[in-house]
Image (cartoon, rainbow over all chains, first blue to last red; front, side, top):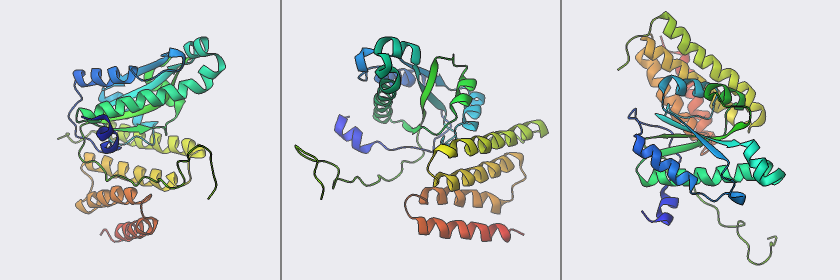
Length: 173
Length: 97
């Protein structure tokens, strides 16, 4: 699949079949994620793949934005100690977020390319997620990604061009 | 197909809805107010889901769950349509007998 086609065809999928995501597919998603750019090459991201139904139900308790129920959730986390050690304050406060977002986009595109659907969730209670996933103090959840075989993909929302891009200098209309 | 849950499983499923609702109360403090209606409707849909799993949901209520989920999708696309569909769901809830 052409990467530009994948970017435009990808959708946030919120309804999934019960069919599990295979180990091979999970591996492909994580492989795509870890090939994302990383500020200072810190690679301080950590991924927790959840496929146990009971744990997914507990995650949905503390993740109001979570659709589903999905058969698989990937928690995109950051090792904040590692990020600060390698990237100082910039690494801890900014690059952790940017790296997580770039890794997640890679994961989303890979999911789409292999016929899976996915949806990014930022609406969750971090303390609750840490509890459910038994994350150590320094490992912080940044995003959750619901993954599964899509029942249906929503229609594409429009994209605005006007007032979005400027050339050479920013200018008011 | 899932078997009918016993009372302990039913209580656990309801507690999951409680957990979702309480978590929403906390996370909504930092989110757009528009998410409030979504979270409430999601809680309603999840509650009906629990009723369905327990075998205590009339067909009309199951149909309402479908309508609730459809209305949620409309919130950010067409608020007038969202208001109308929720009004209709309220009316349907009042006339379930």
